[in-house]
Image: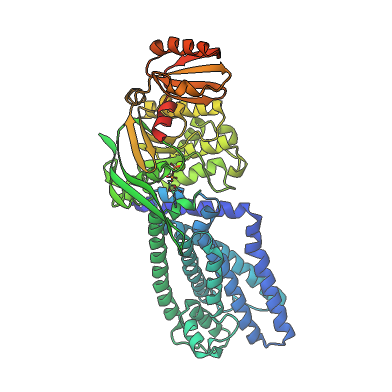
Length: 264
Length: 311
Ligand SMILES: Nc1ncnc2c1ncn2[C@@H]1O[C@H](COP(=O)(O)OP(=O)(O)O)[C@@H](O)[C@H]1O
Ligand SMILES: [Mg+2]
């Protein structure tokens, strides 16, 4: 495939996802309502519990990261979910494109939405709780966001793979397992408080490292050495694994007829 | 030149986890389709028509057999093949809130179109499929007929050399079906597209197809031009009678009568030759005191061939 065709296929998915997002009121709630409710309630809780500004920022970073990962991973999962819901999955697998175009296009839209959400939540945190998320500077912010987006991509692609493997009934299971994993990433607490077997799981989640690195800018001693490099390396490994799983799941769906079944 | 060359294709579906059930959808199907022809796959529900189309269109991997489409192996060379074919179904589905123009454009981009080329192609297809008035209508608000036209427009977006149509006139009003059929015929005559369609409407197959393959329970039972099939199955003529009283048990055993069936108040007898048998039949009926209210004699239709083969 030529570069032009590659970019075009990705762009097609970007346009499609953006159009769908702009047409659905449900998307509004995903993008704004729940994240804002989340930041407000966590922020108020930090007031009620009289947390120090450092502790409050620790928790708020976790909330914001969770919101961004959630919004972005959902968009990545839309790579197949939109078509599964409208039973049109077979058309895109009849076209001469690969799953990379689907996931990449959706990811780009997810990053745009995640970026907008981040700025909104940052503004809200500043206004309501005097919490300066952007204080560490643009490079640190960029690395933090990149970490969130990479995690979202991994999670979203795994969800796609599960759906291509088990059909739409896997949806609930996919989201549940994914959220379970994310909760372990130390969103609201340092990973060091976790008991041993769980701490190992947390150490295997890339988001853990990006949170660790970003929190260091707010005065918390890093729990890991070279958290950014570790986070990136882990992300690359998982991203490759997730992509391979999704690819294999689609190949299998072509064999079992699930691809057709999800289109009727 | 063959557009499709399939040999001994089999496909069995497994469904269920604990106690999987197996459905043999195709049990050794061979099919060749010359370029530039319209070939119809005709058969009852569950015969395996959609399964066969899906394998030919690379959406489904066959269990065994060899399938070459446009010179490509459907399994090994699927990616290259996909740019040259397309498919539309009579039960179409697309993203519900996208508008007609956006749907066609989305798939256009997937097939590598952009800029003014894309715009021109979308315009052209919207006009060809008579969707101009609905260009900005969300897909979910379209009628069945319009949805099928969107499917047709989408299936032409890459200017395919080979087009698969799965029950293209399913559930359409008769006048709309006539128009769709004309479109399909035009696609072949004006653009030279090879078309493989499935249907269970005999009229459609009879009217559109150069050749027909009857498929039942995963096997192709007969294959040929509509005229050949009618001849080959040797159906004889059909004498339709309106009788009073309507039921005459011995009619099926009368000399020269191959079989009888009741259809909408008529008794249809298939006989070896109408000129020879009709006078005898009428005489025998009147001798029994049965009134003959109406008589029609006709040649066998593809429908009769189908009923015969599907037995
Ligand atoms: N994706 C699928 N999964 C499981 N069974 C299937 C699938 N598609 C078709 N079948 C089964 O295979 C048989 C042939 O189906 P199909 O090719 O759709 O028939 P037709 O199109 O001629 O009506 C049917 O018994 C059907 O239930
Ligand atoms: Mg079918």
